[in-house]
Image 1 (cartoon, protein in one colour):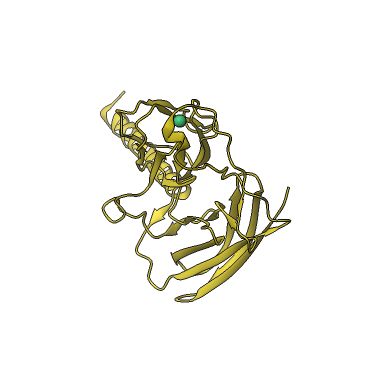
Image 2 (cartoon, protein in one colour; image 1 turned 30 degrees about the horizontal axis):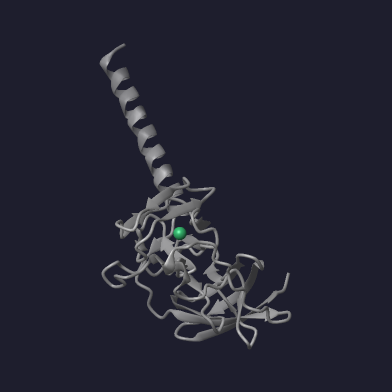
Length: 252
Ligand SMILES: [Cu+2]
């Protein structure tokens, strides 16, 4: 093979490599969420209503001798509906948004996201954490709990937290709604929502949520509740304006 031929082959190989890396970069861009400063964003505010008779709060029969578990009555958080029939613990997110505000930096929001084991409950019932971001897991009770993630897309974890271990951290690599249980106290249930972008909110005790700094555009809002299921709705966000949304979830 003469020198010229070798040079041609080398150039060809280099071009192939360049094409492949460009294609890879583009596909990575296409898949992922891109953060940028949002100027002239709008806000989505809404309420999640309940269609059905208001369920009675279910008090948990705490079958353990540990005093801390009896300090306060414990109620199931599987379905929490206000007297005005608004649903707490529903998760609202903008489906498939590709471009928008960055995740809050840990320094701006230093106590979040956190999930605590306190009074033999997980607090909060639903914690939202960004992909690859740390979720702080606390044990404020001086007793043994364990954090068992029943995940399907992420590797399941089962971390024993004896009373002396007060803090650990979890990270997740794939978006998922993960059920978390303490196997010692079977009524202890929480959810970790691993979010691929920062437009996720959990409804409060009035069934309310607010998503801010949303780039103007038309989106599909997704609403998820652990027992009532999932629904979607279209919403249009205009610069500097507030878009109001109402969801209704039916009793099962
Ligand atoms: Cu426990």
